Image (cartoon, rainbow, N blue to C red; front, side, top):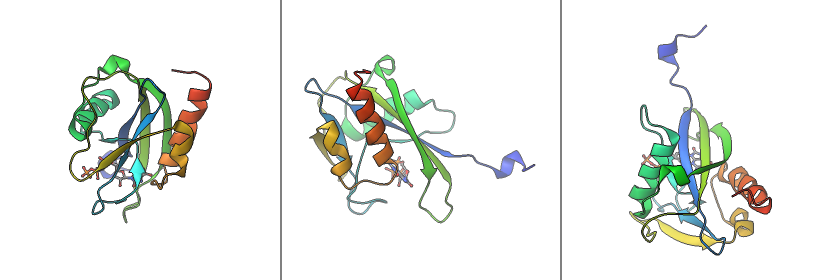
Length: 147
Ligand SMILES: Nc1nc2c([nH]c(=O)n2[C@@H]2O[C@H](COP(=O)(O)OP(=O)(O)OP(=O)(O)O)[C@@H](O)[C@H]2O)c(=O)[nH]1
């Protein structure tokens, strides 16, 4: 059995599909110089040590888009599992929440761009690999009126 201190476990990422009154979903384009530069993704980021997925989602959305979410408005939607593309190939799990309420007007920060997309068109965007199954899962849930 491996020593627990040698295993840091998966990299956990919390992401959010902000859904507006017209049913459009906010997507974020990563800055050109970043990892996965120029690709679109659901906004969010890595959980910090000891942080819950909901707290990470609220913090990342505030940092990246300048809008305030109430954790009770976050609806667990779909997850995707794979591995990071760095040499370490660490297991990676992305947890996607759906959220239809927020305070403020989303604005891109730090060289990123944002756009509202029809849910059926998200998969046509160039994205990092795990965002495709997230988009497909979200679309299935929206078709089922899950939110
Ligand atoms: N959304 C997404 N992220 C992925 C995929 N594969 C993969 O390795 N990642 C990595 O997962 C991490 C997501 O965390 P993040 O959004 O906080 O990353 P970041 O570069 O903006 O933040 P950082 O500056 O703290 O590293 C990034 O390092 C990203 O490159 C994928 O398929 N989808």
